[in-house]
Image (cartoon, rainbow, N blue to C red; front, side, top):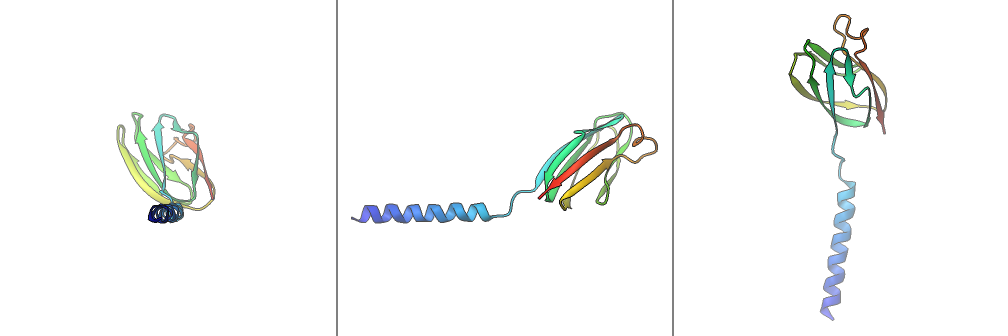
Length: 116
């Protein structure tokens, strides 16, 4: 008679533990971006709203920067350098670009969509 009670108690505990785990805060979105002459890859990015971690790698031979219009900016990412930063983003569509002289005009732009 005690075994079914213990079994039920364990099932109840496991149920509540899984419900609690589902309610915990989601991990931040992470995305890796490559900069090179004359592009940003990926060209289109989609992340969930909230904290987003960007790892930005300059795989080109020139200095670049990474700007999310209306948000944070990383300056001076030299060739072969990688920088990581975290930004909190609201839902919407953002333009990502390198704004060094002539770089944006040469094609260093990308689209960032932030979904709820």
